[in-house]
Length: 66
Image (cartoon, rainbow, N blue to C red; front, side):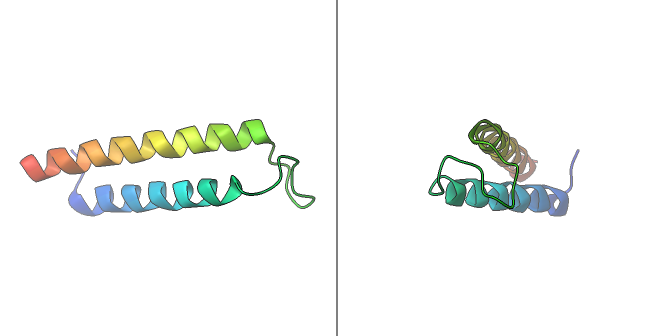
């Protein structure tokens, strides 16, 4: 079982990724000249961040129940 600190760290990282993904939604669909990130890759990153947040939330909730 994960400790509260590790769960909080994972949740914080997931939230940072989600914030970054949300900010990127406002950028042009073409990759930035200094980045090789494509719209498809950004979508995958968004989905991965959302899933990480869901898992962190479930783990955090379970930790509270114990």
